[in-house]
Length: 214
Image (cartoon, rainbow, N blue to C red):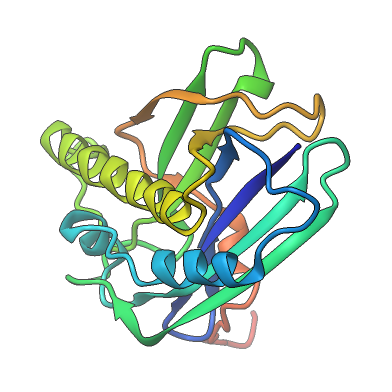
């Protein structure tokens, strides 16, 4: 048994990188090995996808989608079975002005019928371009638009996998390395509070203003 970790790869002005990492569980198995040609085709198809007008607006022009990385991993051990990386010929830039720090993110929660932490997952979509209300929260209409287009984006990723591997179906899932289970998603949801993804700051260079003290 195995699962697929899809990483959507991106960059930020200033040299920082970011990624989101949804998981898809196959309904059938690959056989003794993963067809590399098919895996490469899936990676290329997913890298070429457009997330949608609204998700691109949340990125702002300070961020771009650059490609995709697919990892097929063993269900029992999480060991790597197959990998493919595809890079867009031209990065897909976000739209709109940057309003928030690079660590800002809209959180897409993935829910399954499995209770507890092993049945819940999160995807952090960069939100430098998000517009906040006076309350500091996202507008409800904006949330509805975002989640609709993001569901389409996730569905397109699933369909790209299914096209590359026509004998295998795929389901959006949550991977638990604690229980070694991969329950399937039954719904996704977005909250109205912009979160912080601290790992997005690991390569972002910082400039300083300095004064002597006292």
